[in-house]
Image (cartoon, rainbow over all chains, first blue to last red; front, side):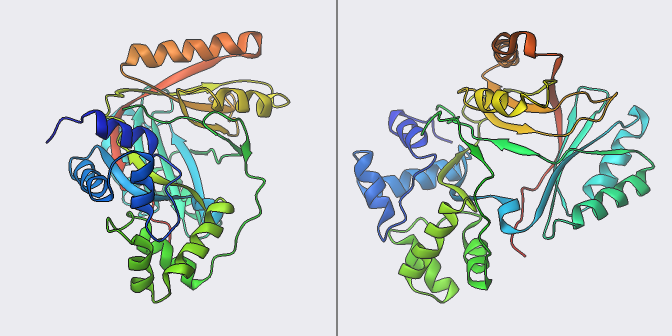
Length: 150
Length: 172
C-alpha cells in the first residue's frame, strides 16, 4: 500500500467527472493534469489496486435504465437482528444494507430490473420477517456538487 | 458546474437497446486502463469505437450516465464521519430547500422521500461527510442553521455497521 502523494491528489480531485469521450481520453485528461498518458494510467491502476478508488469509469443511473430502485427501512427487534439481516440479505435485489442508530434500525437499498419488482421484493421481505417494511423511494433527487477532496 | 443547483429528473428517459446494454455491462465495473478504452469496449461488444463514443455520449446527455471518472473510496480518503441527516420541512418548500442543501459542498446525496408518520416524519434526506463523526455532526448543525425556522425537526443517523454491500448490478 502506497501513501497517496500530491499528484495522486490532483488526479482524484480533478477527475471525479468530465473524463473525455474521445479516442485517446487518458492522453487528453493527462494533458489537463500536466502529466503524460502512461503515468496517468499507471497511477489510476495503483489507486484502484490500493482501494483508494473503488472504480474508474461511468457511473450509471439505475432508474434511467428502466430498472427500479428504492430505500427501505425496518424496525427490527434487537434479539432478532442478525436473523432478519440474513433474511433480508438473502435477496439478490438487496444491494446495500446498513445498521443505523434509530428506532428504524435497518436500512437497505433494493434494485431491480423492472420497476414493479420493487414492490414484490418488499412484500416478500415483510412476509418472511413478519415486520413492516417502510418504502422510501426518492420523489426527487437534487443535484449535488460534492467532490471528495483527497 | 461544481455547486450549481439544478434538479435532475426533468430529462426524458433514453430507451436503451441491446447494444447500449452490452456497453453498460462492459463498462459498469470500470473503463479499460488502456490508451484507447472505447476501442477496446467496441471490440468486446462488436461495434466501432466511434459507435461506442456516440452511444455513451447520448447516455451521458440523457443522464443514464451520471458522470465518467474516478469514484473514490471516501473512507480511504479519511472521511470516516458519515451521517444520513433527515429533515422535516414543508412539502411546499421541499424542492427549493433541497436544491439549496444539495449545493452545499459537504452533501453527497440529497433526496425528497415520503414520510411515514408517526414513526418517520422526515421528508428530506441529505448525506453529509466529515473526517470525524464530530465534523459530520457540525455539518448537520450548519444545515439546521441554514434552514432556521423551516426545520420542523431533524435527526442524524450514523451507520453503525455495514450488513451488506454488493453494489448495484444494473444491466440484465
